[in-house]
Amino acid sequence: MIPTVLPTYNRAPLAFVRGEGSWLVADDGRRYLDLGAGIAVNALGHAHPALVQALTDQAAKVWHVSNVYTIPEQQRLADLLVAETFADTVFFTNSGTETAELAIKMARKFHYDNGQPDRVEIIAFEGAFHGRSTGAIAAAGSEKMVKGFGPLMPGFTHLKWADHDAIRAAITDRTCAVMIEPIQGEGGIRTVPDQCLKGLRDLCDATGTLLIFDEVQCGMGRTGRLFAHEWSGITPDIMMVAKGIGGGFPLGAVLATERAAMGMTAGTHGSTYGGNPLGCAVGAKVTEIISDPAFLAEVARKGALFRQGLESLVARHPKVFEGVRGEGLMLGLKCKPAPADLVKAGHGAGVLTVAAADNVLRLLPALNIPDADIAEALSRLDQAASAVGELAA
Ligand SMILES: *Cc1c(COP(=O)(O)O)cnc(C)c1O
Image 1 (cartoon, rainbow, N blue to C red):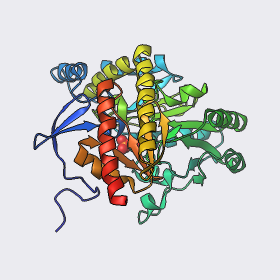
Image 2: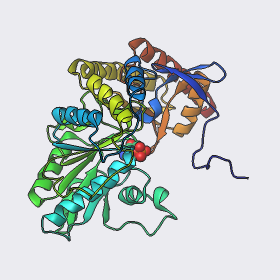
Image 3: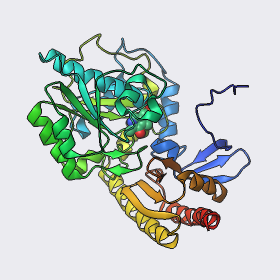
């Protein structure tokens, strides 16, 4: 008999009843050190007092009004994001997938209104993940995601990951945009080199192609900058943001330049819940905390500390790990056995991690994880690796 919850996930038999910072407490009272953070969502850990305050204060005032009215909390968060980034304007969503939908629509509408209605093709990359809507799976294009769900939305070209010559060759007079994650998350913590992002910007400028960054996973402070592309010195035309921005409350945002957004006039897009007062009140608090340069410097320092510990972990377990990858607190361990084995052994050792493609185990802790918890994480990961290593031996 089918479970009452549609079985689209292979769920671990763990249920959590409470969270405190980087820790989750299961229904049997056992404590787990959370290095997954709800897949890069709980950017400030669980039950952060300032976020609980922001949510409960707003909950006592008004939850939902509709985008047919002015929403001051939404206005405030948009102003904050515009002040901190390349963007001139922001649309709010409830998820990352919805940001992919708007990014696609916005890019196509730009060329349509610009007198080039045939520019509809979007270039995307192998290993990409942009969400689970029909548009987002067509964008990513992997067999695993699209099989059985056709016909797919047309207009996507898939290229080998970050191959500059292939991108140059693929851009035609029908190309609308290039959509890329500066660091692939689901794809296995693969960082596009800064030089490559710069080359991509030049190529887009030379051909009038819009550049869309999907920073749903790598953004919101994870790399030690508010957004991962900031390290490269270039900016996109459109950027997708979600996951960390709500700190656990469902929230996403599409950021864009005035020029890229020019086609999105009244009536061209909408969302019932997107930009609701609850989400935006929490999102503004998250953004305020994370965008503080002192906070971001701490993320970079903690990332370096964690990485150093992971390098020695890899050296101690050569049968289990091949290396460390990633930036800041978006880290990956390239594994020899299936990463799922390490996730499972981690449950035994009381540490939560996330598997990714390319045989990588993802470590995406809260950005404010205390140094002592990083040390504890390394010790628990060592236990998990020993358990997997013994099985492999
Ligand atoms: C998670 C993710 C998405 C989809 O976000 P949802 O909130 O699950 O819809 C899109 N892009 C990237 C890079 C992601 O990591």
